[in-house]
Length: 189
Image (cartoon, rainbow, N blue to C red):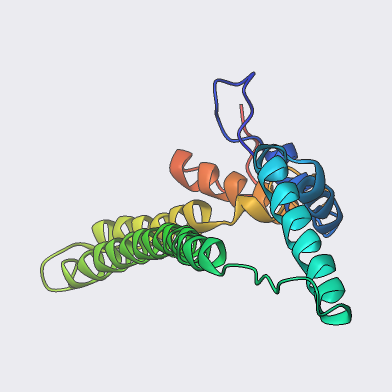
């Protein structure tokens, strides 16, 4: 999602690859051959080999009463389970915090725009302002609606895909027309 060649900035093409349904296959392969698996691979392999040897010896000890019985200690499993649980919890908490912060900021933007539009509507009463000033306030309210739509448009759902971005382009053109005061049918210079 964040490309190194752009200085760590967001990259839409990488986001499209990341959000595709094929990522599950890539992630499964990544689990088997990823960096984390290589880091813990030796330790896990030794633990599996040790467990297997203990199981083979235990089966042989049951078959022959001459061999002493050996049990696998549970301490390694008891020590690693809480650590794994904490890692999973912290990762989930971090993801939830990012989602919560994004949601909170989106609501703040929406609340600020609503408040601005209400103030514009309330402070331009017919008794205090001329028709021209009220029409300008209505244009500002309409422009605020367009700006809010522009800000809140979900670019993460294909903003760069030209087949799906036609509504976004039209909305941005309408916003720029409103900002420049150019009517839709007029010629632009």
